[in-house]
Image 1 (tube, rainbow, N blue to C red):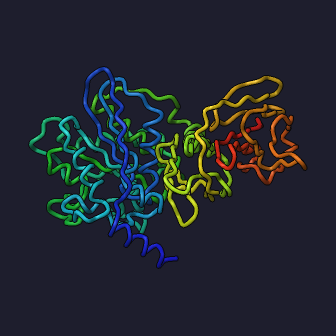
Image 2 (image 1 turned 90 degrees about the vertical axis):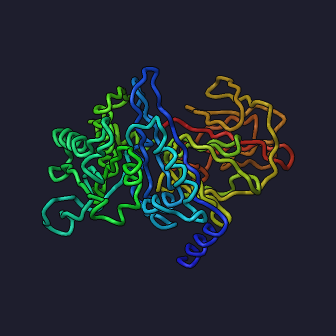
Image 3 (image 1 turned 120 degrees about the horizontal axis):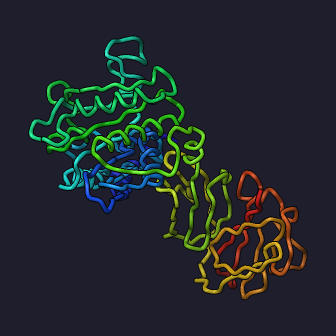
Length: 431
């Protein structure tokens, strides 16, 4: 297995590049400063990419602008590795054009140096808990967790946001006045004094930024905090404090101090649409779905969640949200029929019309009405029936083992024209 991983990386180095990342611009009608948030430069630091993804979905900017790149190292994120092509955060001084990270590094540099960007945050999870004095292997001066990192005290050529230590200290003080999940989670400011003391840090994103007269800070929640929700809340509170200092006005659709609400929202992975004719709810989806009708190649995968990605592995697809593998899809290859005709369904005594590729909620029973399609309800069978339409069914008529979710509420209904696959509906019985 280790040999295959190494071989895969070598092939990528020779023929490919890291997956391109997306930038989301949240801009208000009222002009103001622009904050650039960069997440996921290290693939094994989930606080650093789940937080900006959460921010993009749940915050609205009322004054100023926030640009969000939630996951700039997608290949490493899916591998849950710091950097499968070596450390991306050590490539900002120089990088070979053949490096798989080259295109993404150039794109990040262009964002950082954009004239509109006033301040940059680079989000991480760091080892341990930073302390000025050595206490033990977890609490010590070499730790990075629970800190705001600066490369130097000031950018002397800048009047606006150039006093890095003063800004970081204000953020630290505000965070520590707020309620922490544990007293030892308190935040500090760590000045790496990069130019004089840290040659390795001279290769980093934040040092590239400050040497280009751009204020930049790294927010490091601790890897030793194992609860993802805790880390996301700390990251979001840090971002809010920076926005306050930048006079960026915002609102959000949740209570950041309500742990249960934030945890629930983080777990909302949304849907995955395949080839515009299959839609899967990723909440509670089973670890593996077999015989999923797909094309031989060039299948399209569209996620509601901005951390959603698919990795092709041998003869199947692994589905990820961030570093979390949600399910594995084992395809059955079909030629696709471009379905135009809508489907009529009797849902609990009411007839509705829908296109293929939707999820249909059912209280008690459903019946697929006759159409030009052949219907296959996965988990139901009746001798002598070629097309399973015009049959009134309840949940009890379908075998639980064929459900696509762990709660046994969701079932596949497939539609065909001859030997071609037209599309699928998911029948979702309400709990």
